Structures are given as structure tokens and as C-alpha cells.
Length: 107
Image 1 (spheres, rainbow, N blue to C red):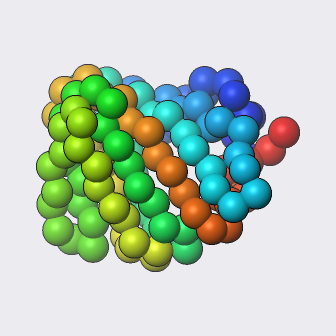
Image 2: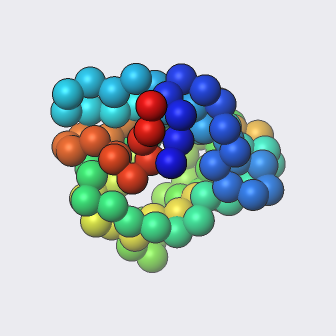
């Protein structure tokens, strides 16, 4: 579980995140990657939009590779299996809707 508004290690090997205080039906978090760092493959019932603030990343979404870089967005549908690898140092803004990512939250 994560703490709201504090940076924390999200994955071993250079991935950290900060979950911002959620609204009633939407949640936002920043994720920072060192070059070569990976976000492990997973899925959740939440629809996700990810905006690349800095860098370049290769996403695997339901076995399809999608590369995004600064200024680009990727849509990850509900229950899609997805993971990511940073091709260079990168920073993302993730938005989830509905419901909230209770699996990540704690006060």
C-alpha cells in the first residue's frame, strides 16, 4: 500500500511513484524511471491514461509494443495486461478511473 503525496519506491531497480490525493472517481500519480528500469506486467479493472512528461518508454499492452516520448499519451484499457521499460530517464503522469486504485492507497 502507498502513502498519499509522498515519493516511494514502486519497483526495485529505479522506479518511484507519488500518488496524489484522489478525487471521488479519479486518481493521479507521477512515476519516475531511471534508464532501463521496468514496471512489471500487471492488469487492473481501471481505465488508465498515461502522459509522458519526460523521456521515452516502451509499453507492452496486451502483447503489443507502443513507444511514447515526451508530450505523448497512451490509453490502457480496463483489464489490459501491461508493463513498461524506460528507454531513457523518464517521468509519467498516470490517471485512473473508476473506481480508485484501492490496491495502492492508504492514508
